[in-house]
Image (cartoon, rainbow, N blue to C red):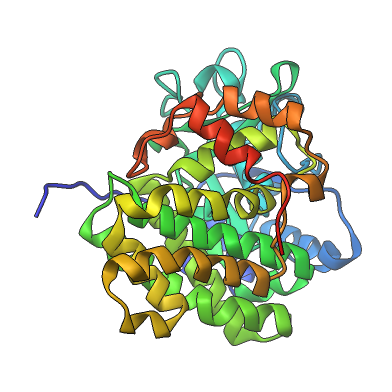
Length: 389
């Protein structure tokens, strides 16, 4: 066996109804909390009130920054960090999907460091231990951000999407309460659920994987195959929601240790150049071409995942099953309503050229079993322009 490291410092509080524990947990880390969320809307009104009430009951002051947007920008982070500094908060709580949790992490950095959060991204030495303590409460089941050292942000002026990737932004605590994910619309359930699949599959494939990551990733893929369709069919199926919340958490644990591969690096650039496209949509668009580009370089692993998705592949050799796994993943995308191309989400061929040109800005592509050139990235992306039935 090869040598490997594994690091997961986040305390995970898992279970239905456990969001009500936020106050007693937060009191261990500070006295004045910045709550970071998207603007309030009817489906989350009760949740926001419950969290604030728990915090106040446990003696914390609460300052609410509700300016989070999808594909969060440096401008939004600065707005939140200025609020954090002027209020003198000593703790940041991210409540919401990946965008809220990532924004919270970036605010925790910018509020305590010179310059902006962008100055501490993955191309730098990263933030120091002065970073404010972070607690993450996920309301979706896919990003895994509640237990990763990653905060994805876009530099507004440059349309450049990058990430802070540093152990100093691991949340101290992740509250994973499946009940709060039941408010997700069907489209968000599908997109974030597929993101969870991608985190685990890509960590499984990554050149930086380990036996522990592989064990968790395969388990998560089995769960997602069975329970994502059930969560889409019945949003109030708490068993399905709980299983997806667990697969999402596993995705955070696998991603934080093995990283992701080619689709995520390209998908991040899609978000930078076309911020109206969700991360899950970008991955769904790229995957059919990514699998066909990569499977021959990781035959055993593609065969294993293909057989999870389609047990009839057990009758085939590894080489045949690996090839057919691409079709099995296509079929899964169709089943969850994500059989889409760039044309469907109004991304132009000119934008595809720009996305490809930035395809090596992030190092994720280097984790892929087959490392792509810029020209190969462009070919992959152009073949994703219009999806055939």
